[in-house]
Image (cartoon, rainbow, N blue to C red; front, side):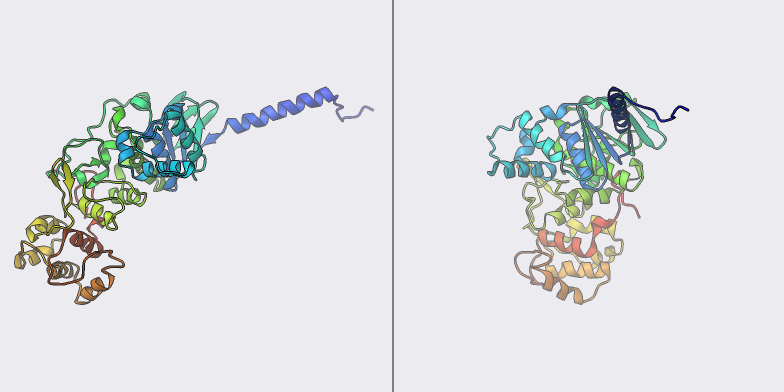
Length: 412
């Protein structure tokens, strides 16, 4: 009787091992990736979008078709760094152990090397390098993208390619108009998620909906197809929007503007520009939040936009916007008119609107230097500055917490 056990020669065993290895590799490389956010294109805006989405706690895939090898940093962002750009320069300085000088050459090859090393260490981020897309389509609520032997199914798709090539593949045409209707005469400035490259309007802002397409959960990594708009700051905004949609399992038409803005400010992005307010200012976030409500506004002077934090403020300056947020306050304004508000008047307005008592005075005095980080001194009879107004109103009435829609209108 013959044995049922197969006898293999060394050559047969070697061939079987190779076939088994190829089979395992086929399984590994023919997988389906399911990130929350997929960013296509390692342009400045694309790579920043991927980093921010990952920072925001969402599993993110970045497809680098080779652009990272020629990535650049504009002189404008280099001279005014914040957010992702500031983080990039900090990594360069840590590596070379001396500050980046304005005249220092940062070649695309060098920046590409920095970004490759950086993105390899970012939690929640996977980078697929030197590959192209064979197809992209909407599959139910998700996006389905084919690359090599892999399928990627993502909740949100971000187009970071030059000329918005992916937008063309899904049938989107035309570009956004990021500078339309951004003056104080309109309300879109309340939805700002970054500042423009160049702007002559007051305030200088780019609204959230400039990043949204007409297809749900398809996001542009920059507010315009022009290469000058493909900045790291723009990409950071796009990444925060994409992360919000993926994290909360929602769509771009239902985003919470204030939560996205708060996330961007947490990661040191700048949403509204003032020439006289530095990012390192201890009250910088309060200024941004109050400016985005419109209760305190900037002024255009000598080609720049200034908040004038040390100047005084009148009741007429704030009457209309405060009433919009807090209808109860209109009674206070009927009895209180002043060209230069005092600290006592400001606290009176807060107490009346928030229905607080005399204990607020003691609370403010106690926190003046420590928690509120205010200079000068606590003196109820002294004229209040715009800085003090912004910080105190923001801290005790929290108008930034009032939701706005994509057009900047208040949601009740």
